[in-house]
Picture (cartoon, one colour):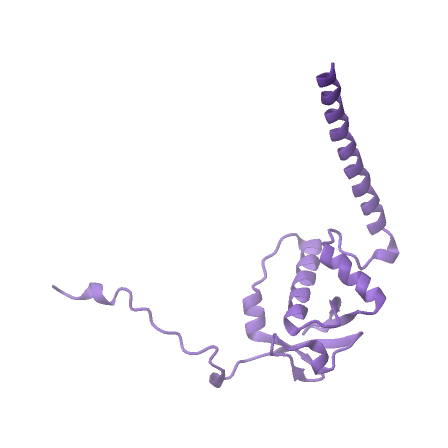
Length: 173
C-alpha cells in the first residue's frame, strides 16, 4: 500500500511542478505585456533582468546607439562596462530587433566590426578592453557608428598570403 502512495505522490508532484511552471510562464507573459516593462526583452535572460534592475538602481547606464541611416536604439550596460561589453549588448539588441521584424537573419559581426566602429564625441572606441567611462560615456550618452578603415600599419587587413598547398603537386617527376 505504501508503494501505491509513493507512486501517487510522484504523479501529484510532477503535476504540481507543471502547474507551477505554467502559472509562472503565464504571469511572466502578463508582466511583459505591461507597458511599464516595455524595455524588457520578450525572452529575457538573467543578465538582461539584472542589468535592467541595476539601471533602475543607478549602477547601469542606458546608451543610445545611432546607426548610419539616422535611426537609433537604446542598450543598457553596467557602469563598469568595456567597449566589448557595449558591442555584445549592441549585437544582442540588433539580433532581437531583426528577429522581431523579419524572423531569423544572419549578420556577420566580424564584417560589421571590420568595416565600422563606434564613436563617442568623434573619438573612436577601438580598444575593446577600455572602460566606457574612460571615454566619458555616461547614462543617456549617444554613441554613433562610423565607417572604419584600418591602417596598414596596424597589422590588420594585410595582404592575403597565397596558399601553396598545391604547389608541390605540379612538379614533374
